[in-house]
Length: 89
Image (cartoon, rainbow, N blue to C red; front, side, top):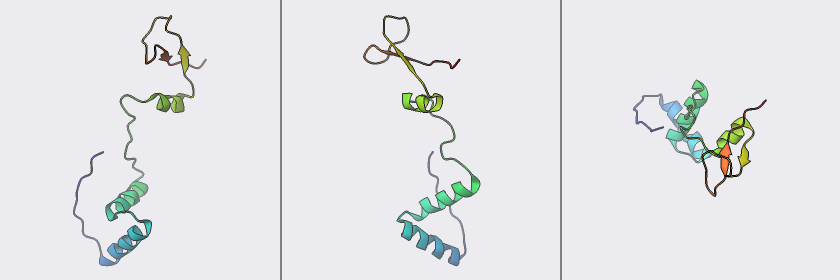
């Protein structure tokens, strides 16, 4: 997700609290405000899954993979081994 610059007006007392908190957490003011807004709005920065998920992502989501030798028909992936999804029965 791309960052977009905005300009807002807030009371000085709140700005001082934001500055103090960001210094104590050792993060930038922008990152602190972003974290606060994400928590308050319940928004996720990457709500959509990647277009081409990784094998580990799929394994974590589905919990299983099956490997088989290349003697069976199908698409090969690296080192002539095939990774295919298995439906749970």
